[in-house]
Image 1 (cartoon, one colour):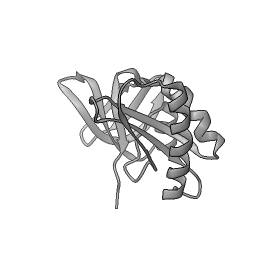
Image 2 (image 1 turned 60 degrees about the vertical axis):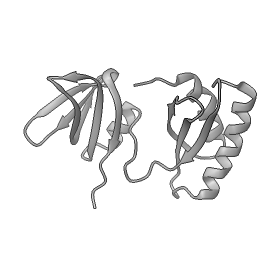
Image 3 (image 1 turned 90 degrees about the vertical axis):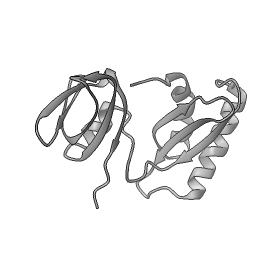
Image 4 (image 1 turned 45 degrees about the vertical axis):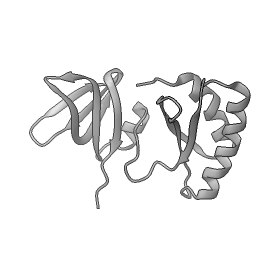
Length: 150
């Protein structure tokens, strides 16, 4: 699932240096409507001022390094209640929580899985679904996020 290591290696130190947790990023190339979305967190939560501060600092670095050709919009956000899961450590941290996972390729004819994170074993996530348990390869994950429960 690691697609943006060059961007991450530029942005993570900036976010950490400002005292925030770098959760991850999404880059969606769509011509002049491309979006670079950065997720940050902290023990005290995230405010609009926090997002603005990170946005200013990251913009400065990206302007100098210029890793993305063409136009794009930079968005800085908290992970929210439907928190994206970018790393195996994220899955470990949220064992016992419900998540939705989209795979890059179908597994037994299915690409989308919703279930409880039971475990992380080596490079696999074990999801308990209503009728079965599935073992999903982290390398084949396209996108994953928590499912909010109210």
